[in-house]
Amino acid sequence: DTGVALVKSGVLTTCTHLPYAPFQSKDAAGKVVGFDVALVDLVAAKLKVTQEIVDTPFEGIKSGSDLNAGKCDLAAAGMTITEERKKVLDFSDPYFDATQALAVLTGKEVKTLEELAGKRLGVQGGTTGEEYINAQVKEKKLDIEVVSYRDLAALQQALATNQVVAAVNDLPVWNEYIKANPGKVVVATGFDTGEQYGFAVKKGNAALLKAVNEALAGARSDGTYDKIYKSWIGE
Ligand code: GLN
Image (cartoon, rainbow, N blue to C red; front, top):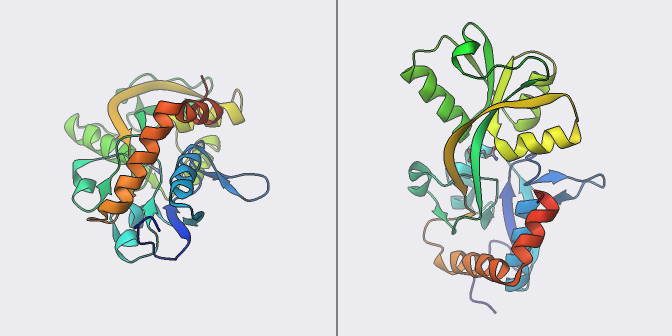
């Protein structure tokens, strides 16, 4: 016994929000895989339990309500560590650095938010990308219609079908989309938001948090982290 209490004995139950490739998505066989999943598998191995993934809306993850309700032990959702979220969740050490990026259809390049005046810009509801855009629109008094989509797939679909002329999300998910759909969209510009992802546990779950941080530190020191990074993110 590792001394870590789990909501379901013998299982590390992990809440995520699909799809969010390359961090979590379903493979051809319907299995949830990705960068986050591979790292959390290391935590499960350390605890000598299996991992079970629960797909749930991002709102319940970032607000702490899923963890508080015992829906899962751990949250792994490409989730940026923010001061606001730290009030309701306990975050692991950072495991990934990200920035925001503006994607457009190839050939429809715009370089600045100002150029989107009078146009529709897509964001993903509840994310740091949405917060960043709303803050920019307010601060610079931009005349942009910000349209919020419930998940990444809906946002990418809206861009692909011209319902919005540009879309904002974390840079690595656009890089992954471009890999999977060559030639369709380009990253027109980036916003250096300096974000870091963390896994989260219910406030006060120090035993699980310690196991997560130890698994991350172990993976960083023995080369496992680099291997997982190469296989899901690239060189
Ligand atoms: N990193 C972003 C955030 O934390 C997006 C996360 C996500 O959509 N899964 O808000």
